[in-house]
Image (tube, rainbow, N blue to C red; front, side, top):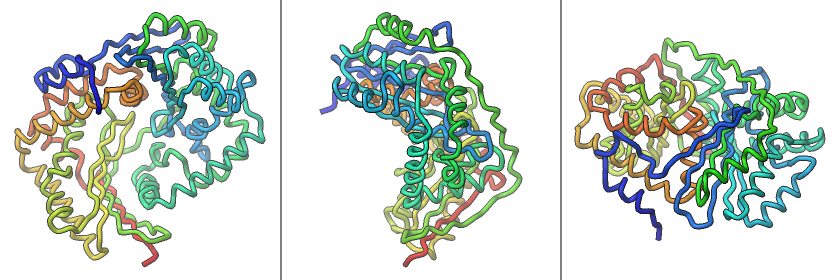
Length: 442
């Protein structure tokens, strides 16, 4: 049975009326080393357990050089190759010997490395993590082996029709911004990756620097002890971060449409993507858009009830309004049971959007969605790993976690008129890209 601490219970009971102050039920301690490395420590009731996240504020958005997409994800793999002191097998044996779990993930705006372990092994974890972040070492053969494995991962990924669709939508929707390619990269770039050994060394030197990394430690820890150990093992890490010159996407002037054929059997999938705004709690339009998706296309929406439950024309319908560093795509995706229903479903989606642009949503329903969003966030703060995982994206996007409180405070103030204004701003033809995926096999 899931348990939560007393502070979290009080926040849940307080409901929306407490939103103006803070949503996090734990005290946050932040320090910055002279070399620019930020350390965020969050003690919480979790007897003996600790989550340790190294958040690199670099993702696939930073891959600005032509022909070099996929390297942020590549380093998610290569960091486990280890150092001269702790080669990959040694690193793995250390993690195993202390009963820890270690993993990593990459997306558009972040590369994060995380471990869960017992508090008595805190110094050992900080020692080995600081070593690989400062002293990663791999030779050409290991580089070529890993880059070849990534192409295998790409080929496995495109067996999923949603990944094929995502690749096509991004490529069509964006002209110059690096969100044009998926996190794993363009296929042509992945194929060429084994020849880019020298480039990979430069990528690591540019982005894996203390000014571009945030250490997030959550659990049964004392902030002073954490900071002392971080200073001991990371103070020698030299500055040198070189930010990418990411091109901003020019305004789109008209609707774009496309199709993609999936090389296999699948139901047709409709993706209607609209260019949005970067994450910014001060932007009321953006904040209102984050609840528009739930209101218009969530499981309690009229269109969901009609198309999924009553008429059973779709087996999936959802909206995605992501929090990202730059201009994202706000997407409405439907998997449709019959090809001949594609125009009908598209028309239903557009009619739903139009209704929100002309009629304010019911205030009580809006209040319910806002309260549920807050509740869901809080209910995912019950273990060190879940706390760190929920905060890692905010850290990557903004450099800290102050934006969490700012976002939920702004969300509490969203009105039905704000939602209508956001629908009018973002969900318009000149921001829209529509792609339909169909399978070639019947």
